[in-house]
Structures are given as structure tokens and as C-alpha cells.
Length: 158
Image 1: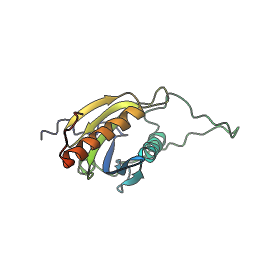
Image 2: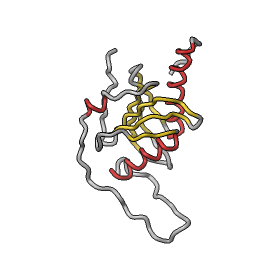
Image 3: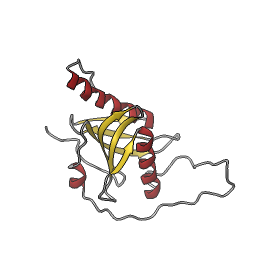
Image 4: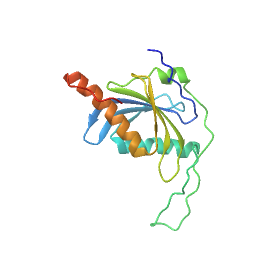
């Protein structure tokens, strides 16, 4: 494997280690360079919320829209702080999931969604995505490919 697409490339780069597929989508661990322990997630919603928290804490990429609330008249204040990297890229890239490992690089948060690139490490393939939904569907299709290979069925291409 040439590993040409294996790089983090941004302060908000995330490694997703998918260990299982449940009714709520992928389950596993999320790694970033600002803490050594993986953040467990059970379903696509938890995965997205943990990533959004990281992006908000870093204020990168800057959100294209402001958060709205109809329950409180209080204005939301910025909660980002300067963080120091704890893990090096090599340590992040050494993490792997049971069903799949993905490098997610969100480049923009526009139109109330994310745009960026995702690399499926086991296949060394990189695809751009235009929304959070599309990113989740790419992860699910890659994991489905692995599961159908194990069952001996024909596999769709990623």
C-alpha cells in the first residue's frame, strides 16, 4: 500500500476508527491531536456532535452561520481557546478501527453543513464531500463494503 493520501493536513484533522455498525450508524472512536484518549461514539449523530465541538473549540474552520436559539435571549459567546497539540500526526495515523479507518479533513463549514475530504485508509482512497450527510454516507458505504466482503458477497466500489 502506497499510503499517498495518509496525512492530517489541518489543525482540525480527525481520525475516525469505526469498530461496529449499529442501527444509528457507525460506532467507534474519534482521535484528534489535542488529546491522547479516543472519544467513543455510538452512531453518526454522536460522531458529528463530537467533531462539531472540536471545530467550535478551535474556531476552525470558521462557521459560515451563527448558532441560533429560540429558548434564551442570551447571546452565545465564543468558547474557543488556543490549544497545544499533544499527539503527533504519526501517532494519529497509527490508530485503526476494526471495520475501517478514515481521515476527515473539514475545510469549510458553510450552508449549515461541512465540506472537505475523507480518506479511507485501508484503501488509500480520498473523496471530497459536500455535506455532513454525504460524509456519513461515504463512511457507511465503505464499512458496508467491508461487511459484504466478509460475507462473500459482491462489493460495491467506493
